[in-house]
Amino acid sequence: MKKAKAVFLDRDGVINEYPGDKEYVKSWSEFHFLPRVKSALHRLSERGFKIFIISNQAGVLKGVYSQDNLSRITRNMLKELSDSNINISGVFYCIHRKEDNCSCRKPKTGLIDMAISKLKDDNLDLALSESYFIGDTITDLETGKSAGLKTILVFSGKEKPDNKNNWQVQPDFTTQDLSEAVEEILKS
Image (tube, rainbow, N blue to C red; front, side, top):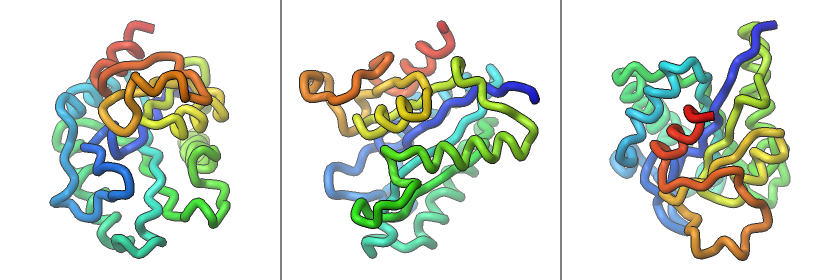
């Protein structure tokens, strides 16, 4: 089976503006791409990386926003990315709450497992040593590490560099944003 290198991305705080603690992006009007995201994702696409979006979206089951709104946000996001010649290989959300103890909520690897199954459906195998998880929280790093991926923590969302002493997991790299993270990947 042919090997595929992949980048798994958290959504809020990595692709779009972080809505703040206890907040959610509830509608398309609240979704705003971060600067340089589209150009960064375009560079990954050009280099042959499979791009997957992996995100906890518990606001659905908490009743903060509907599944329809989440689907609308996703459709619009994917259309804008496609219009910029960026191919997203898959979007996988966990809509469960922490207390549901599901297998897909990060830091568990269920969403990554779903993405890997999609690769296998396309007759591709994940090139683990060339694949990354980019996130803005320590939970994202735990997910990436548990899946055997290299991890990059970006400071464009929730986590900030001055919290470093409290991190339970250390990233392989830290960058200011997705654009710098992609530069780090392309240097490897």
